Image 1 (cartoon, rainbow, N blue to C red):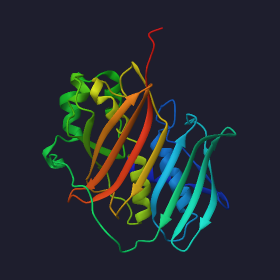
Image 2: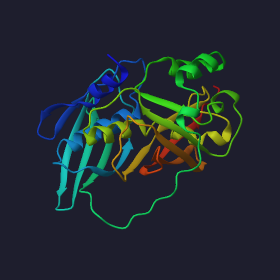
Image 3: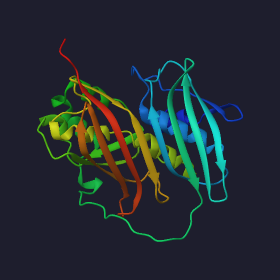
Image 4: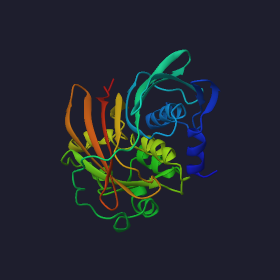
Length: 286
């Protein structure tokens, strides 16, 4: 099974009862469930209770690390069904305790004022080394944690505009950009593309808070975890086409980093915005 097929299987929740769904986790050897998986599955659960409207925003909090060996139960509360907006609340449960909660809002497309911030200058994805080439050239120089991450087949291809930041350890301004897309085509259902992008939006974002310190979430000296996650969908898009995920970190302090992201199509259309705060605690040597 390809990585993308496995991702679609993971996002295809099992209905248990009205407003109740069960999700599984891939058995990859991780000690905890990837946060983007929980966000994506929670959005799937909410979408399954909404008739025909796309999500326009979600706001979630991570409360406990997920257990990859146990299924995750998603309970959806139908907060409001209005003529313009529909609101859902989702709680993800494992071992009788909430591990994640999310509110999501859905809205029909309407005609109105339009503007957007321009996409920043960045090399096009075909101008950057592919993951295959990056593995061949940089893998031997990478720390073990980073090498293990890149060795696995993954459903999301990443092409970092500045891949050397993971190798040279030099501090940089707190911003980074990465091109993302699925490694295989997706079905045409727009809801699937939203849920896949929600999954991918948790990748690399918290790392933007560590760029200024010459470190990364792969460093053995950093204890990192997403604390919350907010996302806004602006336009229709395809997650199996190249998207530029440009990220910055306005602030870090108190062992937390605040990060923001804007996601553009290759043609420069802003299709989504993301914000997140995460734990970036330096591990004590003892």
